[in-house]
Length: 312
Image (cartoon, rainbow, N blue to C red; front, top):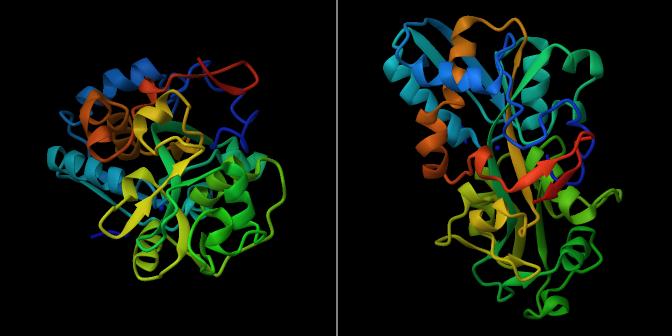
């Protein structure tokens, strides 16, 4: 089994060339538009294609990519799809260098790559996911404000009693630099402020966060909704709003990311066919929600010409 790793604020202005509504600016590798991609995608699995597709990048939606890859390979036995989830930064670097055919990312490529690298890539927005703070099972706090989260992750708040919990030192589990989940969380909590505090541990992948917070008392971290597991840790509210997909779609829950899959403009047919499949009804109509994500078409959020994001 393979390994399982945009924000509203940090990346404003980076999507100026995208469509006016989230989900409508999807361009297939080689130049297909969204409607064209959807038409092709629905038939992609029925067409005979062959070749190797490789990917790296965000662990936050690797499970979705894996599930879609299994369906695609079942229908196209001459295609091999494999990859890892080593973080958005590594995925984008790899696809720009040509060492993988797809780079998965929670953030726009412009935030990680040079302009001359980005111009050779095509973005596919395949899903949206909420991300929120999670705490150890023994922590009694179930709601934190953005200001309190800022205090905890900047090291200004160090004891749970300062935010209504027990008298216990807070253990902060962060993701490593280069993680799209970290960039999304920091952008939502800190805005444009510089963040120097690294926490008590820096972890590579979403799965590592799941494991460590389940075995550590008094800890806090953050995960995408698809990695929530209330048998191991508790997902908590932010500003009184529950971390649920329906609260992301209307932007009442403020921490979320668009999941991007990048390929080169001259990608081979197998890669193009798989990315078209990711945008098809076969994936967007059912699989996205089954895996704990939100179809981009469901987001009640608009972008103006400059790329600024706001709720309808």
